[in-house]
Length: 492
Ligand SMILES: Nc1ncnc2c1ncn2[C@@H]1O[C@H](COP(=O)(O)OP(=O)(O)OP(=O)(O)O)[C@@H](O)[C@H]1O
Ligand SMILES: [Mg+2]
Image (cartoon, rainbow, N blue to C red):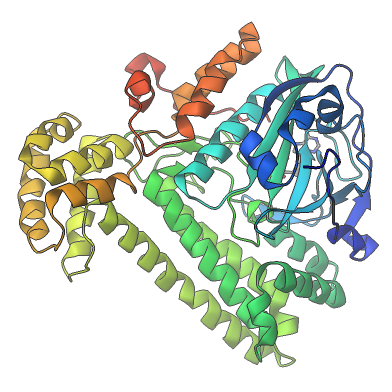
């Protein structure tokens, strides 16, 4: 394993107008918080080196590694529906790309490493709390099997950042399939730079969707692929109760990974209207609105591709509309298919969607905990002796009982025996999710008491979310009334 980072850069060789060359800012006294050893190895980086003073210097932006070509990427974006023609990495620097063990090209980026030409009024920094949140939640998402950017390491900078008050600063080393966003296309399209859009589209095709290069209509096929991946991604979010919180077009990855964990949260009691972010006053990005918003964001991507799709504008619009219309089909298949797995149904009968819909409605009426209901249904699927645990989650236990009668009847038509069904259900219904009150407690301990013990423990539990960890059972519980966090002030 090499001590040097084996960079193999491609984005930094695209036209100069796609980014700004920039060095990460130096920080005073970097201190390692955590290294993700498994991910490091997967990238061919020695985790011991990464944890050494030289590695920490690199992670904090103090020492730019050989072969890195640091850049801040340019992008635009619709923020809460308003178009901003220039955003860009205002506090992140892409060091370069590394080919991982699977042969996949991965970006290595430092987030919170200082000002760039895209910083506008910002300080280019990140506070420790949001860095820990992103680390915990992105790694939990990966362990849940949801496409996401990853966290390679977090370091404290030893400097303070000014938010509502002075807070400790930190840098996150983030790994992504790429950092190309819908907003990256919008940046070029807003400048009527059709050549630029074409170069970017060709780059994305080569990097993420090489199979479309050989088709007759590569750009509309590209759109088709991005639509399918976003639809599947959002379905996966809903299936674990995840609320992204800030689905602006600059936070939508072209590769279909979850990106930007600013004000994200997992839902406790099931309610599709759930919103956590304090800045989302209209509930634009509420849990249940995420599919509609994803479609809206993809429509913005389609607009940028129109000049590439066909010379004739009307023809281009027709083709793009057809691609966008497929969103619903992809989403429904992934979402309904996933929900049925969650209640132990492998085949799809006409009335199954209604059956699972009634469960969700009953959960909403009874404020049943989303994660625990499905986890405990695994035991109930093995036999009625498992019912007690589920019943206890409903304000009106009889409402669950009524539903369970229909469910049991339906299960009889399934080929699996009860034991196999229970095991299968346990692979799609996690016991552990990064509950908001736990994250807040982790951040509180780190920021107020310089205690990273709770962070380490939470990361460890969430690395295996589908297993029971009896010694960590408390992490599976919903918040007590006094622990409930109903709003998040992202103060990123
Ligand atoms: N402290 C800051 N200093 C400079 N720019 C910032 C700062 N915080 C956010 N920005 C910029 O504001 C825009 C929107 O921020 P947003 O919170 O969506 O992204 P982010 O969390 O910084 O990064 P990412 O999307 O890469 O995870 C981005 O262009 C971002 O770079
Ligand atoms: Mg962002």
